Image (cartoon, rainbow, N blue to C red; front, side, top):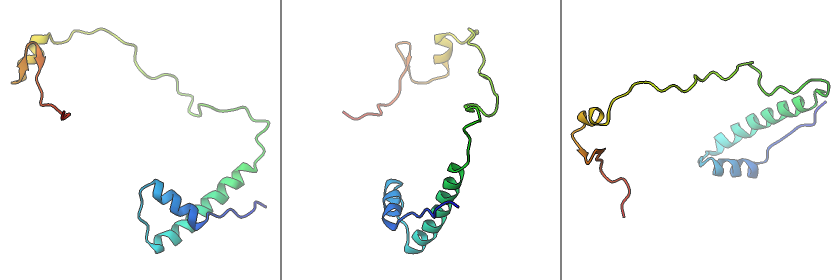
Length: 100
């Protein structure tokens, strides 16, 4: 029988602070119970003997699904700039995003 795992109110406050959450006292009470249940379940999983099972790093058996790189025809620089009203010296001209 797994030992009861409980999260303390100070641990919950720390987690909420890291997540930038402002929890009400009612939410804290609810989350203490829920997180303790999750930790108990994880502790129960930790007690399962998996020493005879091979490691499974990829459970879906998916291979690399990305396509190979191919050079395809594309627009010329002047064609790409023709759609812009702010082209200058062969480049797109945009407003500055970083103030100096």
